[in-house]
Length: 102
Image (cartoon, rainbow, N blue to C red):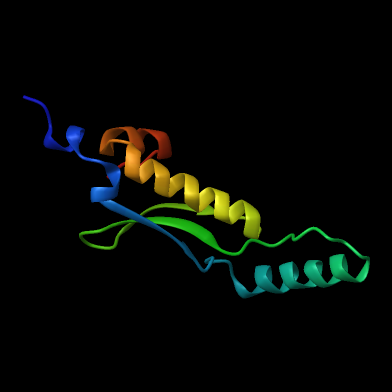
């Protein structure tokens, strides 16, 4: 008999959000300094990440995936992609795609 998770969508088990990065103070200082230098020389490209895209289990809020979100536009595309996958992929397919070992 097949596993009932096979028929469920990943979004029934998981939720995705952008959360603050777990980077240490030193990394945040270096990133901020790089942003200031980039702005001072007229750079138009956003360098720092807005945080991390994090996927958590709905039942116990346990983290199952964490990836760097990237700058604003990249973060928006990443979270949109993950949320679409949660909506459309089965639990097994989502786990396989993201390497989730739940």
